[in-house]
Length: 114
Length: 250
Image 1: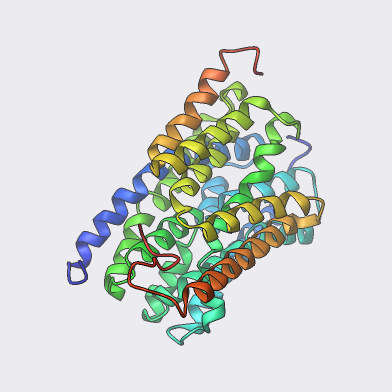
Image 2: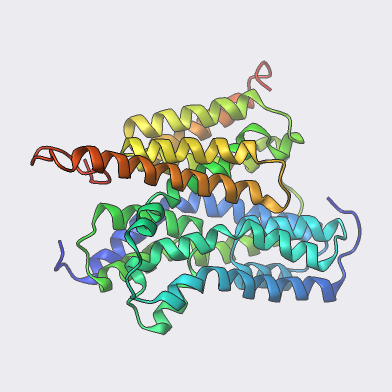
């Protein structure tokens, strides 16, 4: 990861502008719309933001993990699939978390999988 | 429930936020460790987390800076990773938009993946809550997530380089998100939205600046909304008391 010393001006420019930009993205609707009513079609789409964004965020990380340089890893695939199954079945966040962690930890002792 | 004091909403939020410590802890420490390895000192690492407060974007920016990418590219990529925050902002506005400006600023600052996901699920499950209860719940969720993010970043920066990679720490984040997903997929529309969102992100993975994530998510939202619309059309005229409304808690 260490390619060279990061320039201090660049670092602080990035910290400040990225901070302002990130806040701007979070504030844009909450700040500008306030309590004005949003149209029904938009609300209907927004109801599915969480369940659509999370898989979009996670799917590439599951199939092409950065830790393995993007190589599909059976262990991570298994952990993800079982966590999803158990979470959907029990509807319990802890059960799903525990399942995923157990597969990851257990798998590191099974050289067959890694 | 609707007239319960906001304080009980705060503590319910706090309880719902606690499990995310399992995510925030390792993930924050990992950022601290990587930032130290990239040559940042403790103050710079901590400032990064307090000012930006967005894990994935922080990792992206850090990675690109160590590759000596131009500042514009660093900013554009990291902000693209955070584009989903605008969707969160829009999604949470019907619930928190009526708050005074000061509180909306506070809520916007604390609007991260975990606080959004917990709050969005809660507001859908308990739509009858008052504005005060909803804000209290949100702040309750934020407390075990956001301040610990700073603290664990700091711990990671102090620990420095001694974290063995075979622990699979990188996978803590995906597992945590997947764990949130299972209980949230209550209707067919939710499942379709998730399936389309995930598949879309894979199909569009070739796109630069993480636009694949944005495209996949938008397609997923559209798919979920369309399924809901069709179901309500079908249920509409012949609807009886025993027909469950889509999006209703079981």
